[in-house]
Image (tube, rainbow, N blue to C red; front, side, top):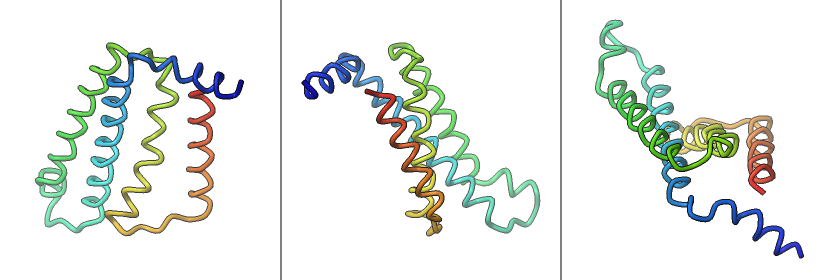
Length: 126
């Protein structure tokens, strides 16, 4: 019976998998752009102009722009009711990318918060 419930819960994704993956990729690349901006904000710059008009910042905003179009494309096919499941993934992606790229430390409290969000995403998607 449990297998039937799980199968029934995931049947709501049938036919939408491609677009859901596009949306998740959009959230992932948006998270990468956020980490790029964070890395750049931690650097010293010669002037305010160079702080905002440098290749890393421009690339990050270009990635945000691409992410917006990918999300809009996915939303043409995926109901907006999936948003509470997909969009919070950025709260998981950003810290993980920060650890991998920026060598940041994640506190136990933040790990607990990520775990609770992940559990909520799983529960909500059933």
